[in-house]
Length: 259
Image 1 (cartoon, rainbow, N blue to C red):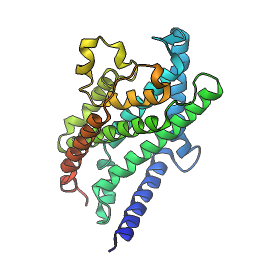
Image 2 (image 1 turned 90 degrees about the vertical axis):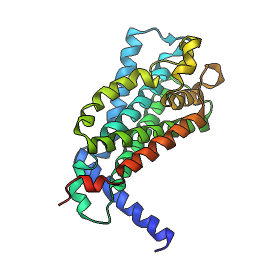
Image 3 (image 1 turned 60 degrees about the vertical axis):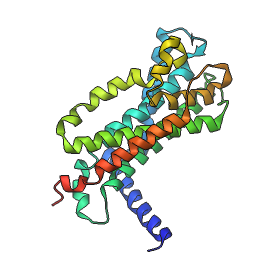
Image 4 (image 1 turned 180 degrees about the vertical axis):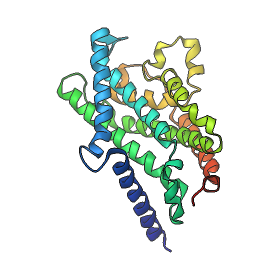
């Protein structure tokens, strides 16, 4: 089998699994896939409205709307990747009866679907806020894209590791809500690294996730806002997490009953 035909075959399998996931999660009627965009859009707009009411227009010299938009959409991507990766195997165990479907297909389909939905929601929220005059166009589009991809790779790696551990030990699945709540302060979604005392900034940046969010904000705000990130460090972490996750998934088919 040639590389091109192999790639097309894998693409068809993943595409079919994504369509099945959309139908299973959102149904055949109503908004369907649009709800994958609409759900984070409504949540993000709600948070922006709430913060605009209870907080001043500017926080540390940064306007509330773009600050909340960047933080909340990044956090939503991170949490959704983790939440929906849980049960990817258990929820589709019947599909593993077909030998051409591998465990990795299930994870790729779910994670890519979440990436597309969160990305589309981010674009729509951004467009709406630009139309309302709440945010300006990004100062560095490539840096914005790079930050979003770096965050996605770390999110997928962490999600895969946690899902693989949940296949081995049921108790791990119960820790997911705790982990997602801990990620609110650890991710830096609702504060900037520059707001921390100088002596804590380097220690905090040992956590890989804030680097992607800081890159997203650097791409939007430009050099006028102080940001701290190191893309190679975050990418190394993403590679390590994904490697560990894939290694742990290697025997996942043997750990579930596919009959």
